Image 1 (tube, rainbow, N blue to C red):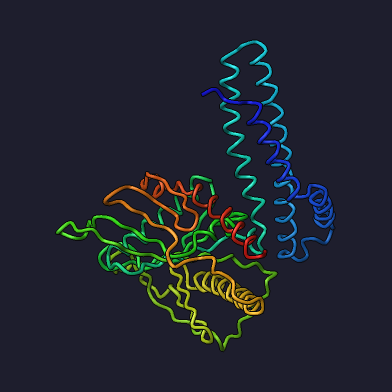
Image 2 (image 1 turned 120 degrees about the vertical axis):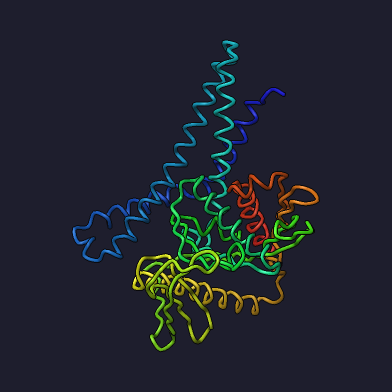
Length: 371
């Protein structure tokens, strides 16, 4: 079917109009000017932490503005290309325009989703933890599959990641793993991945070839910044050191460099073993512990607000996504209904469709609750 160029371009302009309205380019321009003035202050780097906050915020704001202006320009250019191809009856030019139009549609959709990420911590880097659940060795193997899936997703986008901790299961797979995704809006995007994931397949660990259902939990928290001021008294922390280990329990370190940090009042436990020294692991554990406490504090505040507002329908269920490999092939998000029939591509990191659908769903649910 021939592409309706006029309608496609009209739809793109309509979406970009909504993006500009939500973004408020005038306010964004004023913010950039204010940040540029601060960045140009001669004493900026007297406080390196504060300077980093200013320069990072300036970089993000400029990138956000430029992406919108660039997209407007690309839409105008493809419209000219279409007109040229239609006037001259040039099929090659129209084919080129169609390819560019498809690329623009994908980029505009991504930009539109970005405007939905307006939560307090959505701009932050993310800390993702994966834990095997019910299902024995299959669950541990599933946890390792999910770790690979998210790392591959980050790799596809060129996002830097850092594995902080891996606790291997005895037979295969992982008991748990924690890693960072160090890019702006990592938390906003990945926060919708938090929840219980379910895998249905013929177990490769069952010599009778029976079908097995297993579960893994994914937790996503925003990485704290120096301006968050989460102070934890020393007497509220218990620190244990031990030797880090590899797959199957084998030792990979001859010194006690791994750190297990317990926050006594809440019982929150954070383990770190992937840094080279105990000092580095201790610092990484403290950073993740502070992030979890920050999120817990905000959750408690939100719960208080819900109590005051009355009974509000829960947004997230126990099980949010199913990965089915047997008796059929399908991955389906149970919140949004979004599904694909190629589980292997999903496990290879192709999860953008799930993330986008969940972000849109979350916004619609928030809007429904607010009414």
